[in-house]
Image (cartoon, rainbow, N blue to C red; front, side, top):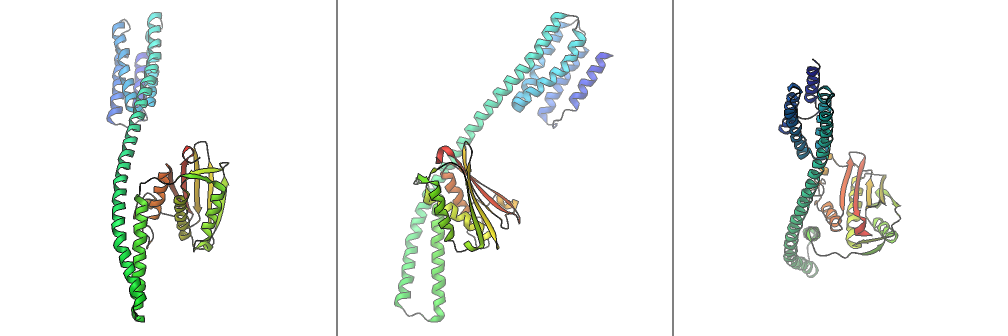
Length: 361
């Protein structure tokens, strides 16, 4: 009767495991259940069979480790240990040698679960790292090809564009243009400037040549950013605050290229703010990274749109080209950094740039 109660409680424990009933879990649970049933229904005077059943427990332990890593190996070995202990106390408490072997086997279950899980996780990390490096290599190769194409296309477009602009300028200067036609030339000049701007922005996005990384004094650079902000047409819309919470004095960056990052982010913030806005630029660091954040209290970005805002030619603005944030991301990546956006509707937006200290200090 006691054996039946123990067996019943063991099966109930297995059936109530907090796991999703997929094929892998079912195989592990069934193998533990079947081995346990044979353990409990086999009479004690059959040590050979009990020895075989004990060894069979290694199969679900290894399966748990292979499928779920270190956590799977440890959990499976612990479950088997908990299920097997009552059997030891019931069957072998009067046979010291068998008792010792069974207890030692429980110790081995947990050792095997731990080591197998550790090896599986190590192998997975190595595989993930290989895949990450391979994907990065493919991405760099793709960017290199796109960069070369962008360079050629930009060059080929700029030559005729310069000719057209020059021709328009000559016509305006050397011919008398009726007032009712003057507006046409104004539109023409405006559209030519827009095309030129678009070409330059596209080239900046895809260019892959080495950038000019130099030593920059942080405090001086912040003063330059303050001046840069003061020259923006819509600066009056918001008050800007600079908060420097780092003891780092110097950065190794391309200062001119990085100014493009701040101009784009400042403009984005100003365009998101209606009146009486606030913008905060904060710089801080931990042991591994330098963090530069720009926060505003504007209208915010929808959560469904955040995943796309760094994609080229994607814009949430009616007249936006969708290149500003793509260029920002590209410049940050050239410095081996990352950028993320946190935003809430009617609460504001925060862009966080994360730069490895070993790259910029």
